[in-house]
Amino acid sequence: MATSVVAQERSSVRLTLWLLLIVYIFNFLDRQIVNILAEPIARDLRLSDTQIGLMTGLAFALFYTALGLPIARYADRSTTHRPRLIAVALATWSAMTALCGLAQNFWQLLLARVGVGVGEAGCTPPAHSLISDIVPPEKRSSALAFYSLGIPIGSLLGLVIGGVLADLVGWRLAFMVVGLPGVLLAGFVWFLLREPRRQSALVQTQQPSADASLPLGVALRKVMGSRAFVLLLVAGSAAAFLAYGKITWTTIFFQRTHGLTPGQVGLWFGLLNGAAGVLGTWLGGWLADRYGARNRRHVLTAPAIGMAVAVPLAIFAYQAATWQAALAWLLIPTICNSLYYGPTYSAAQGLVPLKARAIAAAALLFFQNLIGLGLGPLFFGVLSDLLQPRFAEDSVRYVLYGAALLGFVPAFFFWRASLRMDAELDRHT
Image 1: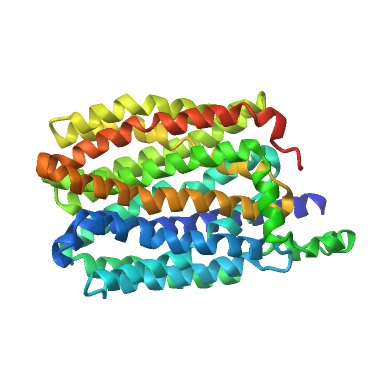
Image 2: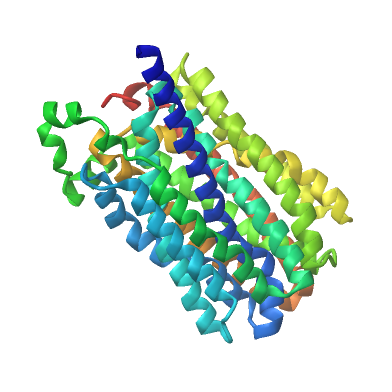
C-alpha cells in the first residue's frame, strides 16, 4: 500500500510538471510571437523602431510587473487554489493574444498587448510556488529548469509558427491561430491539476497558523533581506534585459540586414534559438543540482561563466557576412545565455521563507520583466532610431554589438551572488 501511495504521488508530480510546462510554452508562445511579426506589423501600421520597442516590450511589461506582486501574495495564501488561478490567467492572456489580430492602429495593438500582460502575470509566481511545494530542495533546480523549458520551446514555436503564418496568411490571423487554443487548454488545467495544500488534512491540523499569509510588506522585507537574493535580482534583471532586447532585434536584424522573410527567420532562427535554449536550460539545471550538491556556490557557477563566454562569440555572429554563418556563430552563445534560468529561480526559492516563495518569484519576475522585457526592446529600438541616420539598415547590427558586450554585467553579478550561496541557500528549509 505504501508503494502504491508513493507511485501515485510521483505520478501526480509528473502530471503537474508536464502540464505546467505546456502552460508555460503557451505563455511564451503568446508573448514572443509578436517579435517575429514586428516587422510586417510595422510596415502595415507604419510604426517606428521606438514604437516597435513599446509594443513588443513596455506595454506588456508594465502591467505584467504591476500585477505580479499582489497576485503572488494571493498565491502564497494557503486557501488559494493555485492551479485554478493559473487556468484563469491562461484563458485571459490567450484571448487577448487573439484580439491583437483585430487591431487597426498602434494604440489598439498596444491595449491588446496590455491585456496579454495582465493575464500572464498570474502564471509563473503560483507555478513556482506549486513546484517548490511538490519537489524536494535537492531536485528543485532540475524541476524549475524543466518548467523553464517553456521559455525556449514557446519562443521557438512563436517564431516558427508566427513566421510561417505571417508569410501564408498575414500577421492578423497568426495572432488568432496561436491565441485561441490556450482558452481550451485552460479548461484542462482547471480540472486536471490538484492543489497539494488541500490534499493533506494533517498539515492543516498540525499547522493551523499556516492559513495566514505574510503581509506584503513583511514578505518583501524578508525577501530583500537576503543579500544573495539582491545580487541574484540584479544578475537576472541584466540577463533578461539583454535576452529580451536581443531576441526582438535579432529577428529584425536577419530581415533587414540579410534580407530574409519572417517565415525564413522564424524557421531557421526559431529552430536554432529554441533547440539551443532547451539544451542550455536543461544543462543549467543539471549542472546546478550536480555540482551545487557538492558546493552551493556552484549553483550559479555555470550562469556566470556562460554569460562571459557568450560575449565574443555573439559579436562574431553579428559580424558574419551571411545569415548562415551568423546562425552558426549564435549557437554556443544561445546555449550559454540559457544556463541561468533553472539555477536563478531555484536559488530564489531557497533564499526565502516558505510563505514568501511566490513573492520571491514575483519580485524576481517584476524586475526581470520591467527592466528586461519592458526596457530591453525599447532601449535598443530607441538606439536603433538614433543610429539610423549614420548606419541606415545596419543600425540594428551596431545595436546588437553593444548588447553582446553588456553580457559581462550579468556574468559579474552571478559570480558575486554565488559567493553568498554557502551562507544563505536553504537556511529556511
